[in-house]
Amino acid sequence: MTTIYLATDHAGYELKEAIKACLETTENYEVYDCGALTLEPGDNYPEYMARAAEKVQYDSMHDPSVAIIFGGSGVGEAIVANRYAHVRAVVYAGGPLDVIKVSREHNDTNVLSLGARFVSGSEAKQAVDLFLTTLFSHDERHADRVIQIDEVTSK
Image 1 (tube, rainbow, N blue to C red):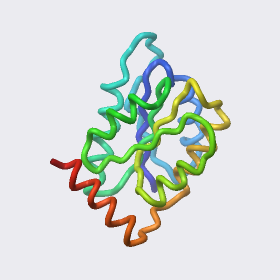
Image 2 (image 1 turned 60 degrees about the vertical axis):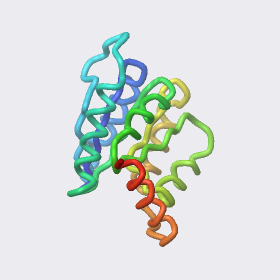
Image 3 (image 1 turned 180 degrees about the horizontal axis):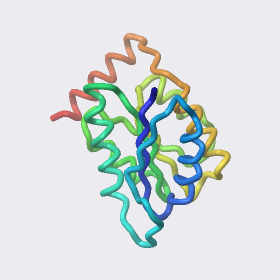
Image 4 (image 1 turned 120 degrees about the vertical axis):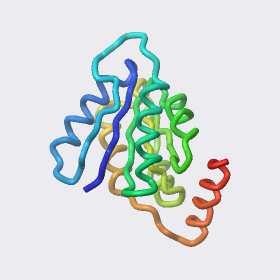
């Protein structure tokens, strides 16, 4: 069973709730909501993103998990997540889904940051599905790079 942490601020709240409802109907996923738990116009994303990133960071040493985080652009949210060792976030704000596929296969990303102001509900669902079903390739050169990423971000 895959553990999935969700986090958002006001800008991604509705999209998070829609994705959460879809994920909770699947037996393969254990879903935890790190907030915001209610729509709070004007709230700030860093605390919610930090909660999700801390969970993924801790789980990376034990039973690996992933997070799906939401914000207006997804960029600031990914910046917060990427501050944590062993957390590798990819941003998706529309366009070709290949960025998600390659990020999972080559970089073993474990956080998907969605730009809620730029993707529709159906695009977000496609992005989440691809993120959750694409696995790390374990190709030696990619594995070496992930180790190097973890080494330089753990300092």
